Length: 110
Image (cartoon, rainbow, N blue to C red):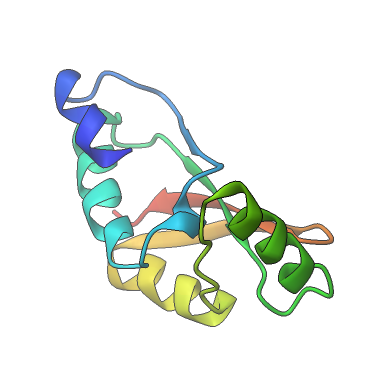
């Protein structure tokens, strides 16, 4: 999470993988995550994120299971994630979609 990255020095990492949590926060939280990642990552380091595809046939069932467990996922459209990534200065290099999750490989724009 973004609030845990403050413990690390600038340009300390070669890669960041952010999976398993972004779908529990409003998309605006990604702004804080991105800002901290850009601080702790070396300039050419990629960022890998995982989000839920709300158009998946499994999204509703998965969401109900998460609610039962006491967490409430937020279903943000993939197009909104892609716009947000671009607006923050990221460029999607690769995208892989499974039955429920979509993973983005992102580079920061020079």
